[in-house]
Length: 247
Image (cartoon, rainbow, N blue to C red):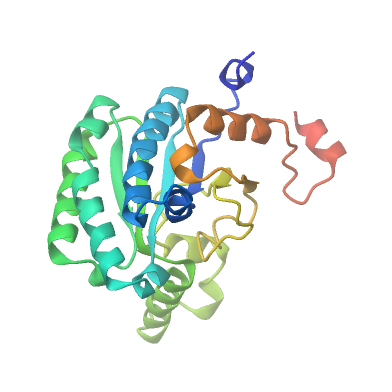
């Protein structure tokens, strides 16, 4: 049986987040320019978006460009921005009834890219299927710092009291407030870290790491990751017996 055939379609994770790592190393291993790896990665984004939508995943969040990525060579940053501008094809979203949402520090994104992607977000808002979230110029430390400043202003203005601040209130002030926390986080490329990605939100997410570079992470690899997730027991701090008693 294929990995897809083994999936329990009643237990598909509602929210899957992905760190799409290994584009540059994929290209280097083939003697190609790093930009070729990023281009191949775009094709996998289309493939995985379609697969996730067909499975009934509600939210797919893709770590597209981190705040730390601004420190890469200027020519690579420029190439990535250009690729983002040309790769987010409206047809992909409309064909799959997918909404697009954007999270990140957009003040650092070139205006032409920012305008284009925000316009796409507006045009796809009418779709009723899966929401694909693009994390662009994003990092958790940026997000949490921004949330703390917003909450501090509310306290200073007398709109809330310090005692009003709890986990839920912090979550409501994050860029991801419109969606649930990820059930499953996938990282390709062999690295075993979260790289400043959805740190608050992934407190109880299931983590899946694989050595496969992102340009080789085809839909069968995606199904394998979900099957691995389905074979785990999510306890959220409880015992196995408590979880079984709730079933």
